[in-house]
Each structure stands twice: as structure tokens, then as C-alpha cells.
Image 1 (cartoon, rainbow, N blue to C red):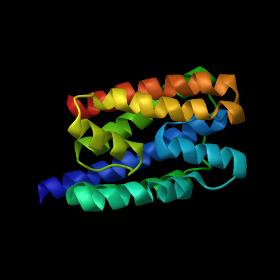
Image 2 (cartoon, rainbow, N blue to C red):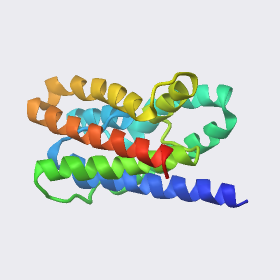
Image 3 (spheres, one colour):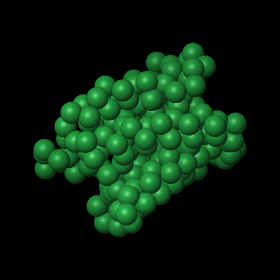
Image 4 (cartoon, helix red, strand yellow):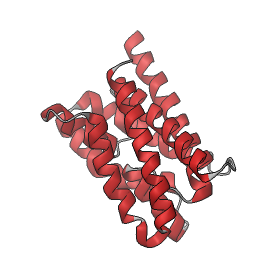
Length: 188
């Protein structure tokens, strides 16, 4: 019973932290996170489509894969995806106006801690963190390195829409997020 409560708590806290990290620090400067949330932010910046809902829709194929391959991870990921989408969209009005560099670091730190915490308790946002989780289970590649590779490709895809400054500071965000996700997942 305590294991289930720990997973639920990690899912709620992690999802809330993602909502704070994304909206509070990244959105004010049009910065990107990695993963499906990063893709959803690109869509939000360009089309004004809610990022939480978009990230949930993008996650559906991975949710189906998790259903087939790892039912325990599926349940945590499905509910984590829903909670994360809700928190991202509900917290969208709450933004902190800080310098872009500080926002990139703090946003990355909060998002990385959130993802690492969720993965540690076998839950996730069902985005590329779930993809990295599955890849890390079948390869010797560190989960933090997987985050940086996947997220780096997503951030680079934002260059045409957001420009060089956003890509450079978004790169800082994903490096911080990947490092802290790895630390939280593996060491604590």
C-alpha cells in the first residue's frame, strides 16, 4: 500500500512541478523543454494550442506501447500524462518574469527534478521520458544522456520558429533538466 501511495505522490508532485517549471520559467521567454512537452510548446507558441492537451495527444502512441510492454509503467504513465496535461494547462497564467538565463536554469532544474522523481517511482508524463525509460532498460545508455539526445533534437527543431537565442537557452534548460533527472532517478 505504501508503494502505491508513494507512486501517487510522486505523480502528483512531479506533474505539479512540471506545470510550474514550464509555465513559470520557460513560457515567458518562449523557451522549450524537451520531449513531447517541448513539441507541444512549439505548437502553443505557433498556433496558440494548449500545451498540456497537445502533449497528452502526442503521448498516446507511447501509452499504447506501455500498455503492451509494461502494464505497471502504463498505469503510472497514463495517469501521469493526464495530471501533467492538467497542471500545465491550469498553471499557464502563472509566470515569473526573470532574466532569460535564470529562467532557463530554474525551469530546467524544476522540470528535471519532476521527471526524475516520476521515473524513480515508475511513473512518467508518457512523453519522451517514457521513451528514454524503455530505451535505458534495453541498452547501457544512461537515462540522462538519452534525455539530452532526444530533447536536443526537439530543441533544434524549434530554431526556425523561435530563433537562435531561444534555442541556445533551451539547450541550457535541457542540459540542466537531463542532469537533474538522471540524479533524481538513479541516486535518490
